[in-house]
Image (cartoon, rainbow over all chains, first blue to last red; front, side):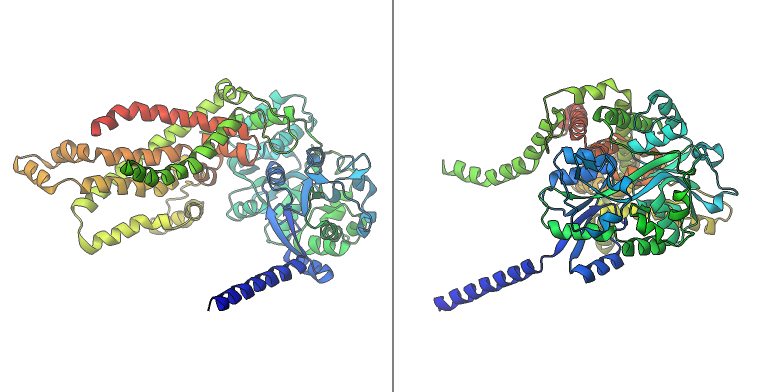
Length: 355
Length: 280
């Protein structure tokens, strides 16, 4: 009797070992950390990737760069690929959160525009800490139904005829940088924070509410809470193409905030080769052309991929026009001292916004 | 001796649990609140009182703290005004099945997720939302209400979330009042208002005080309702603390602000302690 129980238990254990072992063999699953709805989690793309490589992709999301850094700091060895705005790549590398990527064997890296592939924000001491993925600009988007003529100035956000109808992202750095653009200051090293403070305070009658994710932006926009709202160029084309919203993205004459997003591999990555295969797939023209034409995307860092877009594509026309992008200021790394000042300035401004 | 051992063995698990779930995380936060940076990764950290000093140096922190306390007081008062009569009716006038059904309705909101509750409020309150639509259908021409993203919207959401606490605590203490006491008062010629204010309210005070604190304390630290329903008007000390943990990654400042808030709450509790003592 006892023996039988023992045998039963024993065979159960074997079963468990078999199950675990089985899942171990097919462990080709990678975990990606990104903004929600930002390319890497398109279901058709993941199917395409699985077909090509057999690798399964799961996602985790963040709502701010600081949250992304916190997740990397507190969960070492969990993520395989992380999207990092190149303004933060240097900081993440310095903190030992991401590893240098050996790009040999990643065939699509060769097609990246050299200026982006070798951008000093992504490459340090000849080591690549982030593979340039896409770039775009932050300014604002309008509801075409609420404007007779599309504005060409960032001052539209401060226009009293849209009082109480402006959406604004609740992000200290972005808020201060947009005000810096309006005032003609350097976004990475604003010369006059006092003027910026005054400019931000002038938003009090304008702002309807704050948004923090693309999903939330779309919800507010469809509920007709905004006439116009700060936004990201890639997201605007997604809202237009994928959600059918009457959105038009504006590149103001004063300029806009430019950003370059890279894909990085965290320190102690569980599946390095699979992660590299995924990054290589993300900069593949096959993926990008479909992403931009069917869903909507920012501009690829892969020059070959952009040249394969239809000739009238927003990402080919607007951003290849050097005159229009001349005033775009690219986000660079920011010193901790300045960042703290900016965060406090924004919180004080939000306190001032209260009725 | 044996009895003492028995008591000790009965009490120890509870205290261990308390220590593990409350004291330990709290002391970790207290430790953070005196650091210059978060000690994760390769960061240099040192001891400092700067996080606490920041609160007193920047006026806007105390303004927001005051705003949160005002919100707490208002939500608690509204809950008391709505909840007490409801509890009184439940305890003394309604009997049988109806009572059970009403209790179920009161507790029902507790069964749904708080976030879902607030999101459904956003659908009700927003422009062209359910509320505006139905009012305009009933009374054409009332126009837009514009409740969404305002202070009253936050009040509404919070009162809805916390009202059951007040009803339940008041119900328990009103239910314990002996009906014979009320009959005696009536036979001696006391009017309805006299009975209410000189008999029921004083006897139900423990329930009122308990309910008030159960509501006041979480409301001053609330961040979800203000953020989702308040829009531009939704900045409170709770949202600023949340920002420090999720958006800015300044845990030390977030921890320090939380401890300042806790200290102020404790001060208020001490202020009320003579009242609480008298209740015993």
